Length: 350
Image 1: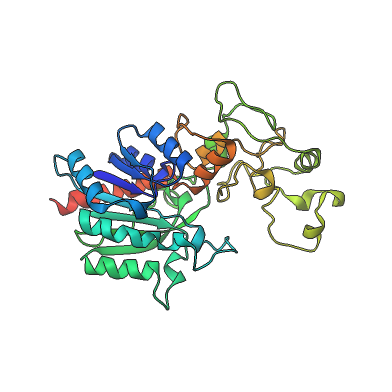
Image 2: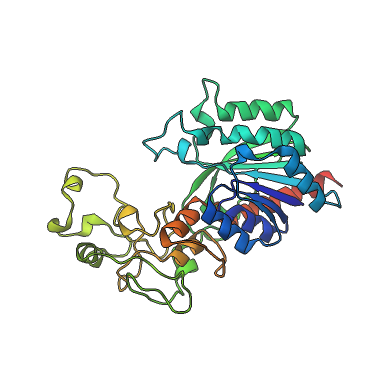
């Protein structure tokens, strides 16, 4: 089965689908550094580093046809940027042009007629425009008009083998009838939930600001003296509630929420949701769980908590690589979705 990955970012979905046995054929993303990362890891794929609005669907279809001489089935992946729909984005606006990116997929779907479609985004995307015309409502109407059957569900990444609590809205559409929700692999009665320790416990110790000689991405930013004192006073799984009063920001003394900021992870639990600022100790519970290491998790550790392979290549600065990681679809979750799609295809073709 072939894959076209729209809004691919650095390739989290593509990596998982490749591990499931699918053929990554075409990728597309507007972000220059994410495009460089993608191309470094998927040399087999044709890549378009363009705004989707400027790409002609007939041009892409012609290129895909040239790479699909055996006429194998196609999975079209479209994980459009989630920031316009995220509850964490307090500045979101209906004027945000990213809201309309899902609309751009219509002409490509109509031209390519993929057998399968995978959409992944933040929970709430399906409710944003429930009572009025909006991108998701238009997409559903389009799928119905194109005779797709689809399912919608909320996926918890830890139930698919990812050491991270991350809820995502998923839509799976097929020309061959409605698919079942992909089977969970971890949790009660299944494999044990994987943890931070399982994925980063073997990394060598480094200090804040240090780059490990064996892996240039096993690195993390420096911390100022105040933040060093804060993290030294933070136990595993702890946060500012464990600090002496003089270390607490004035704005936090009267505010009981956002306890994840300046927190340390727990070794034997999944990590919290990684964001685009997962390199920053002050922006979430991104402090390393080892109380002898007074630092945020490294870029490589963050990538492992998104289940990227240890040898995955990243391009750009620490800030750029962390943004790519935080925006990515967890590879292991995408792999399980890919296996479920392949299983469905094998069953309908019997």
